[in-house]
Length: 296
Image 1 (spheres, rainbow, N blue to C red):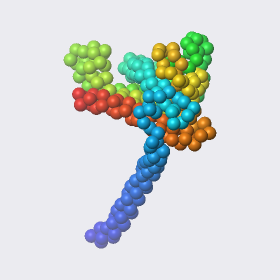
Image 2 (image 1 turned 120 degrees about the vertical axis):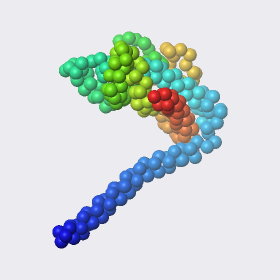
Image 3 (image 1 turned 90 degrees about the horizontal axis):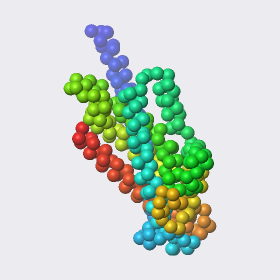
Image 4 (image 1 turned 180 degrees about the vertical axis):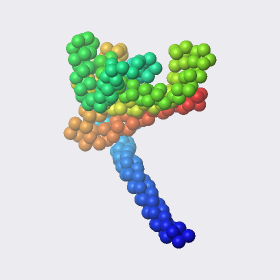
């Protein structure tokens, strides 16, 4: 009894210290979260205030113009949307297909490990390197043409493809192996198991990774500069081989103009438009992902 009485204050002190550390860590984590959220909110508010009076229907439907009051965003807006649609059509089937092969078909060999290591390394390569790759491969070797929609989409697809593959692998790996065995027990083939069991349950995770990758792709500028995409185009693209500009390039070009109206008002209107397109694209992808979650 005496020993228990001596241990009780020590246990109580240890509990108070643990609770104090828990509260302190919680407050530090909350402060770190608030710093990021408040900083982002202030930045967005500042940009939105500068865009007031500049972001209107004329801005969205006019081509670029030397006069800031007549400048428009239409060619770059259409160019970015066309590039992103083509990127999604390229990267999604290639990325998911590669992930399915590596997780479901490939053996655990030195070659597979070498491929996995290179995919992980490629995910961290600077975007300007992919621009040089696109310049040498699609323009120098295949001669598709400088600054076209096709070259821009292929180059940026190479940039985000490792991210899509890695996220798809993690989503496929997260599907319980018991569900695969149950499908085999019902007489399903390997492809039927992948199509009807693995992919539907992995699709929410695959879509999440694809959303993040496309969000990075829409803001990339360095690869487009390396493939000689023009910063300003005065007409909307009409084919896959048309010269194309993108919203980040056009915003960068406006920011270099000496007029204050371009550096603040017009640039802010372009940034808000870019964010709206990005959020709309992400919202559509999230809706598709949620539908898959409800089915599973």
